[in-house]
Length: 378
Image 1 (cartoon, rainbow, N blue to C red):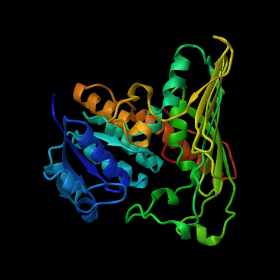
Image 2: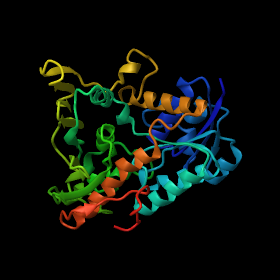
Image 3: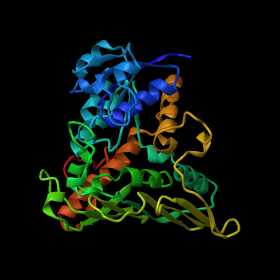
């Protein structure tokens, strides 16, 4: 089995986790190089890690300069785990050297980045796979199977909620890294990939129109990051060309101790939902193609194919499943498990939705780099 030399850029908690996952759980991976602005993130034990990268992999070389790492480390793969506001340029530089990339989501921060990244990917011999781990969860797997079997029928209305309990800034005890948590600087609706990704797996068309509204700010001033003005919550309604409606609710500030990820999918023949309340997630579904009864199973994240695998760790096993499929695709020369097109299709709607919110809910038509009408201005 061919050994794969893997590097990582961005040693925040996510970057360290993904690099250790690849290096520890896959014997054909060589953890060759790591890059970060801050050397101590490589040499010191950090949050939620039982050892430093330097201790875990003594032969791994640390770089403060990304270009130098790409030039000298002879990598097969780069894992891009910088803040989501600066993913694109790191991906593009790797692609220009024909180095395969696993990048986290959201993939890009603006339409210009989407344009440049799409063009770079078309020219490169390397693969870009998108780290949308919710696309590996049990609900998404079941939803795809439900759809392919015909039991769902044609989906015509879907909705998702990503409601993340948030503490007042004065009570925050964990500093993720020196760059802070990039999510605090985003309009809530921009972090839409975890919600749209699973739903888009059963749609044969892109989201085309959006109207979004925000709630304004309703907490004490000290609870908000002074660098950005954003709503406590955002609600967007998307629509496809054929008329499928998708509603998404996202929060930036919330005191409701309820579940993170909820989904509901209505089809012409059936229905499926994942509801998470008080740490007891369930998946419910029914179909007129079978007995018509409402069935209920556990809504845990673990992908069914990896259940019982002791190596399947990270976000309930989703991280492992995602990494396993990506590494094996690189080894075998297969297409990306989650393509760049899929990643942009779940990222760009958040950028358009934010603009709609700024315009008071104005309906905006969305285009993508593969559309002939594509442009980098809204």
